[in-house]
Amino acid sequence: MIPNICVSVKPKTNSEALALIEKAETVKADFIEVRLDDLETLKLGDLSASTKIPLIATNKLSSEGGSFTGTQMQRWQTLIYAAKNGFQYIDLDLANLKLKEQIMDLRELNVKTIVSFHRFDGAFSTQEMQHILNEEMDSGADVCKIVGTAKQIQDNLTVLNFVSENAGKTRLVCFCMGEQGRISRLFSPVFGAFFTFAALEQGSETARGQISINDMRVAYSSLLRQ
Image 1 (cartoon, rainbow, N blue to C red):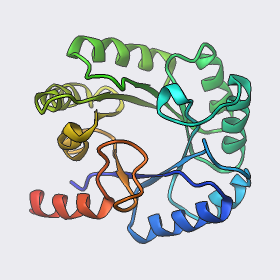
Image 2 (image 1 turned 60 degrees about the vertical axis):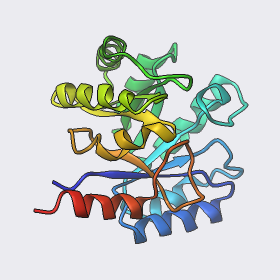
Image 3 (image 1 turned 90 degrees about the horizontal axis):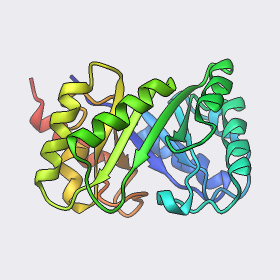
């Protein structure tokens, strides 16, 4: 069992995006999340043409830990543009009032959806995660993503147990952010999560608590040795 790792990158220019994608290929990422929040020039077809690794388009508002300042319509226009230009996955927020409509639009383009829900001020209880997962599955999501923030090491145990019990129901991405959440970032795919997130390298983290993909590969190689 080799865990899937998604490298998250947040470029400001197309040339930077292409360079980061090339680096992600070098370290053998399984998925690449391209954060579109700060990307100044949207030549997204160039990005998808540059790699065979599945690309995920994410466009986060400041309330979601991102930096996009446009309207919801502008946000959607950016994401649908990514879908029409070779991105295989689009990340949509569960709170999106037009969620099901947008999922249907993306499905017509043969693009998969990641429906996500984040909490930046604490962890979820098992009951809260179950409720969120049910809503995400009911929306028609191809991948269900639930991410809280660990305040103590024990928060990781709750998440990993939830992943173990629910990963068979859908493609689930679920872990804790924050320095205390590194354990669940590393072990969630071991317990059945579809993939986990990593930084391309130390110093290029796009969220708190990210581990570099090389460090993750080393840990998996040691821990999961047959």
